[in-house]
Structures are given as structure tokens and as C-alpha cells.
Image 1: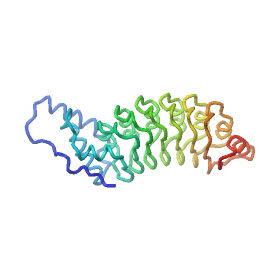
Image 2 (image 1 turned 135 degrees about the horizontal axis):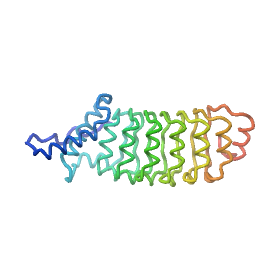
Image 3 (image 1 turned 90 degrees about the vertical axis):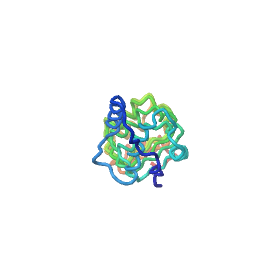
Length: 259
């Protein structure tokens, strides 16, 4: 999908007061995440969106943007980067969405921090952030966010999240309603898996994907013996080097699954 945002009003050319110039600089600074790294048509459109949001503060943003966001934000593979996510996070129409697909968009920790801090993200039930550049700081931003309590599905596969990020997610009271957590192809080891297994907050979790991480017998056995993840029905640990004993424990716990 291409972003239909290029028709948004361009910045006014009328003179502004010193106070208006100060506000403009503040907004531009807040959105200037890695401005030299992002590229592509989508990012250019979102740069105009970011500026337009400042221009139209307190006014209707326009039918084109409203229609685009109100439908469903399918932004996969658009290379929007951190700046693009910051622009989306600043948009009130984000509150109309329950799903947000940001797969493969060169998004890093700073972009995710902006999204997690957005009060307009409060209605999101599904967020796909697969194949980005998110590390432990980004995972921690999700864990600390007061705005993501509606989340039911979260996809963070193919990123750069390690034990610290998994531990942060395990301690997130705002993720009590999370049912599916995709963390495959990251850098999570036994410490992260054990923290997830012992989480007293992820108690609604039904599906956990940890494939192709660094989880060994200790972390896998912790998941098999978890006394808090009582709703967990499916655990994916493919790609892990596990002993026959551990595999037996997993099969006993998840005998109806494909582990």
C-alpha cells in the first residue's frame, strides 16, 4: 500500500511570531529522529504529515488522512523509519485503529518509544513490528507504556531483543490482556525465557513464539513448568538445542501442540 498523504496542505508561508517559531522548532526537534537514516516516498510523505500536524494543531487534520488512518494502517515494507512512527504516534486518528501493521520498516527503539508514549495508541489490539531494528530499549518502552493495555497480539519477531527486553516484557502490568507474543528470531536466552515463564503479568498468554533464539534446557524447562502461564497452549522453540528430557517435559505440558 502506498501512503496517500502527499495531498496534505503544505506549510504556510505567512510570517509567524517569535513564539510560533519556537513552537515550530520544538515540534520539529521532537520528530527529528534519525533524519539522515530514513528514506523513500513513504518517509517523505510522513515528513509532510509531521509538519502538517504542527500546522493544523487543534484543527481538523483533513479527510485524506482521516480516511487513511480510520480504515486500517497497513504500512508494511514502507520504510517509514523512526520519524514516520513518531508522526503516526502524534496523530489523533490513531485512536480509531485496533490494528497497526509496521512490519519491515526500519523502525528502531526511538520510533517504538514514540509509539508507546502516544495516548492515541490506547485502542490498539494488534501491533506487528516484525523485521525491524528494535532492541531491549524498544521492548522496555512497550513494557512501561500506560497506553497499550488493550493489546492482545504483539509481533516483535526478527528484531534485536535480548534477555533484558524479554525480562522487561515479563514485568509489564500493562500487558495483562496479551494473548499472543511473537519473539522469534531475536537474541533471547535462558534468562529471558525464565522471566517470561515466571511472569505474573502475562497470565492471559496463549501463544508464545521463541523460535530461533538462544533458549536452552533451563529456559525451556521453566516454560514447561510455569505455574503462572496457565492459559499457555502453544510454545514454539524450534531451532533450540534441547535435551530429550526437556522435549519430554514440553510434550507433557503442551501435548496437544506441535512442539
